[in-house]
Image (cartoon, rainbow, N blue to C red; front, top):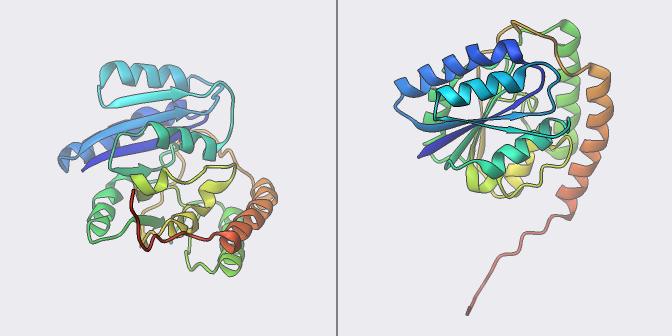
Length: 237
């Protein structure tokens, strides 16, 4: 299997090189066939210049640069479309996800799962973020019939041909477990490490996440109720 790491980037110039080093050390030690796709989402710092330098020095690195900031879902969607791997692994560019968790997640994926999603049980964030996330996850689970503890965790292992069928409208990255289930995926959750942010500041606030998440939740709930997969009984084509 070939693995495509898809990593959206927005103003993370100081975190990119350490993250790249961690991913490549882990992937080389595990003898993965892999590529790393960074998607620059309209960064205003030197993130794009750092990505160009990484791409010049490592053939496994590819980068895409959006003409303007379009958000995490759009950046992921572009990365998915350009990924060549059989498996897609997503993570944040801020270094809070730990690449050392990937081998265990890949082992679980190899047991017949189509998606392994991370659960940051011991989050290294502010109290307000932890409380806001718990409330948001509870509401999402109640309305979508899910049981995922941490839909906001960016560290995910997914079957590429399934996730590529999902339309990545704005905000849909928070609902990938639900959307993957709608594609017929077997989804499991694993506890993963979570680390403090080393450089820069978060691109989200609780208020912004709550406001946008409410309307996104209504859209996903509508899709669940209206989704009607067609099963072919016979065919002659």
